[in-house]
Amino acid sequence: MAVLRIVSRGMDRKTYSAARAMLDIDRRHPLGLIMHGAIEEDGVMRVAQIWDSIEYAERFDESILKPVIQAVGAAPTAEILTFELEDLVTP
Image (tube, rainbow, N blue to C red):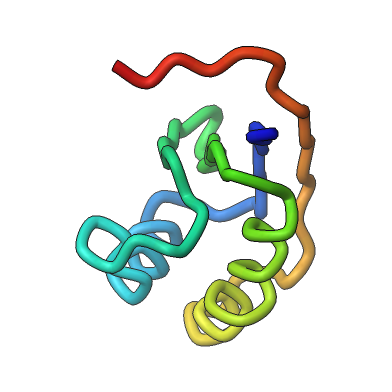
């Protein structure tokens, strides 16, 4: 079943943009990622993701995201809320 994750790493827009550019997820889609979106709230970027499974999300975090987070100087820890989706419509 798919999962929704809400992630906050305390990044500002500049740091988020640098990480996003390095990840290039618009063209290099991580395995298992269904959707990625972001908002800025009070100067802090928050990311919403939908993954095929929590295992895909954790694999991405460890093997792809972690080195990028280190490269842009962001905090390695994150506040992550995870929800198992009961229903998902992707037109």
